[in-house]
Amino acid sequence: MVPLDWYIWLASALFCIGVFGFLSRRNIIIMLMSIELMLNAVNISLVAFSHYMNDIRGHIMVFFIITVAAAEAAIGLAIIIAMFRNNDTTNVDEMTELKG
Image (cartoon, rainbow, N blue to C red; front, side, top):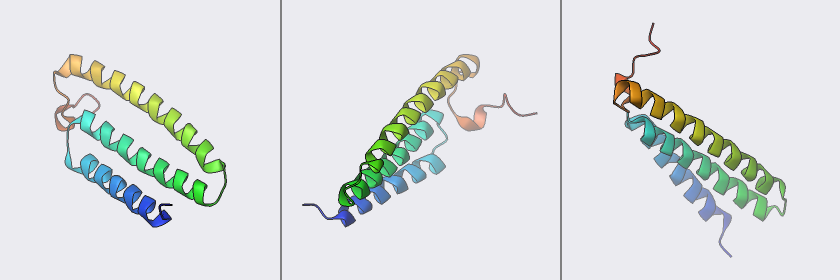
């Protein structure tokens, strides 16, 4: 049986990679992928804790997080496509439509 520490280290490493990708890249698609990576790191830790405490609530929470992440990805991708058609770029620094 794999110890709980390994799951927590894996989840924290994935979360740190996601934070680094979100903060260092200016491409909006990479930023959305980094957010998904952070959500999956949280899912790993929830499932690990749920398994070790013999409780089903962590697994149920993961299903809700996956649903929200899918909706976020679909809406985010639709917004990105609409902005790309207007600006011909996916770079966050070059998008100035919302600036006053």
